[in-house]
Image (cartoon, rainbow over all chains, first blue to last red; front, side):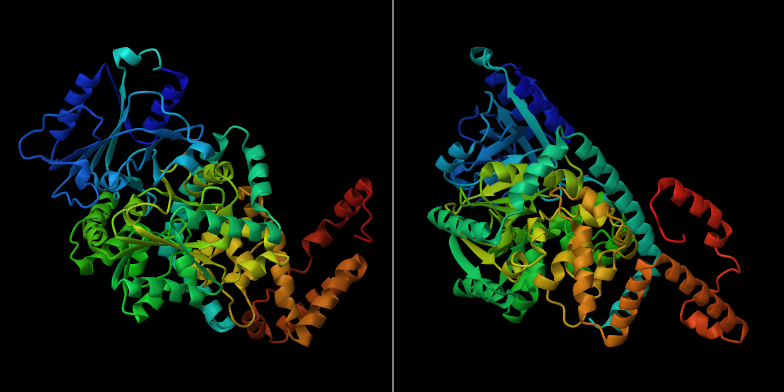
Length: 174
Length: 460
């Protein structure tokens, strides 16, 4: 793991997120299937570039085409690929690759952010060329508005995992 | 607010033991977290200097940035409206909503919307606004204003929050996680059914034409992605030149506001998303502030660290100030942005201890600005008060005369007390001094030390 990825892992963990390291895309599919089987998940949404996942019975699949309008009937698991970091800081970021991508992320109860290659830092030049919004996610949604007690899952995901996929073909860059 | 009601409000806050305990606990925790976060930033002082230089701009440069931002944001798909006053800003938002038949909106936390009285204006136009930040929703349900710019319900304890939720059907415990879960469930439906979202802007990037929005709860993400229309309110003082400057301010903001290395969500919003997006660029006294001796206050990044550090805020809470922006920065900007009528008593809610100067991440000289505000206030006083201050100033310049006046004053108070004037003295809150003052008892010591230092000092 490169120093930048190690910093990403450390920062995400410090912000109450969890990190997993997986050997390949098959292992990622298995991990996402296990996440989808976790208590109460009713719907699953994932980026089209992520591996297909066999969902447990009763978990509805939401396609990227539905991301702008879907209303998940219950707790949603969302799996998205990381696009960049917040400048030189180790915070993973997501671009609005297609309409509704950010919306699904914010509606989710559990979030899996997938790192399959070292994400580049967002620069002014790159930002100028990007359409749509960018959102950086440091960890689960949180609030401390009641007596400064930290509560996870205020409005967005209560659990967030950063999944590093150490694919054999990409070991060098990771 | 009249001076009488201002003082009555203050006395009520100071005499509230629940408020005192809640503030004491919450502020101590916040101070410790902030100190830890700031310590962890390498080269923190250099970053403060850089941020201060980037934010403390002359008025002409600010105007250039406003123009550059508006041009870039428009090119990026935003619809831009300029509002000179609070009334114009409210009217602009109202017109956007009315044109689309919107009657229900969800809001992300926005101090500028509090400043311009947006919720009240929308209600008059038949639009229901629901706050979605947990603390902001709590104070909205209670019919209160936020008591801190980043922690709106800082003045409340968990029992008070439970009482606030009870009329909505909440029957659970006072556990913060359970209370927050109730709010999540109640507000989720609002995000999905509202006709528009309204939020503020932490920063606006002139080079990219984007809005930078910082939050932790995820309500900002939902407000800016679920409803079909989004209206962003941005003060013209929020504009920075570049992405790099924005990221620098962002780094200082999160450490100083919440004591976090980084907040949960940072959004860079553009105008070309699926939503119809508007930005209302609000002046409302900011240009006048920039043209005044109080211009350094326009560099504020609204972290609230000065409030958390302030010993007066720690006793009164934000509501003690009776102004939307409390604490030292509130004193510095209120007269321009909120325009209170009559004499402004806020500058006297300050001990001039200077802790706010020490913690301000962009090095605003807050205590100097407070003194300057006092000067403004004093200029409007009656002849008796001006004479008294002039006499006091003369005495302070002549130590021998000052100490003689002190002796005469103490003697008069003792005389009055022994002649049946005790009740009058109590009413005036004047305590009877001891026969010998501390200075009388230690006079030789003071004289010797002043001579040793060679600092003059008359007959002291």
